[in-house]
Image 1 (tube, rainbow, N blue to C red):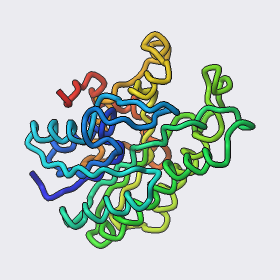
Image 2: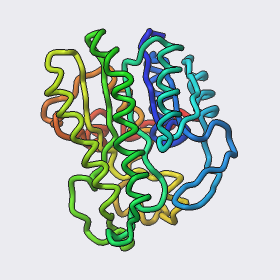
Image 3: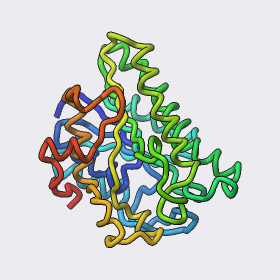
Length: 278
């Protein structure tokens, strides 16, 4: 184990959980956050109270199996005090954060609704989870990165932030609210690079392609639908996150714009990475 530390949001399942274990296997200690601490807990997902597979404790067990150390921190990206507390507890426990992976996203109603139907409350929640909470965490960890002269911020963005929808959200496309929040988040990387040149800070936008998640299954999207879009796996993107933690992206990948996860994972031979969650 090295003294490097990664802080990962949305680490109870999916890409966040796979990234936590991949980073631990690469020598990182990991602070993992999500709403679900233990298996079987019910939370609101796309307007439905459900107990989805996965939890922070399950991720921590997988981290331990590869010889890593995980700090489990129950926190909600819609609850700023809980996220501030998670950041403070991480710095108290580990003393530093070298990699911030802003992975979690808002999972409630409003993401695909037509513009005229999105409520002000939904829009506020989407921007809290997808913009304001990542900003809160950057502000918590950036001073330490700048003081040490190195650090990495990975912001999970979305293809939908940069592309017009092929159809309305309820007809196979996407709406306004979610893509606009991801477009806003994507502007952070360039701003930080311009504000801190020569500081050793690395900031990247990572676009994971289409990845089947438990929340998407809950919303009624099945494997037959996903197969039309050549989806990427959480394990492949998690492995790529671990690779990016300690390697410089090639310039032809356009790292100052958006790192296209599936294409890069293919070049690195990571597309068939096995799940590390057991």
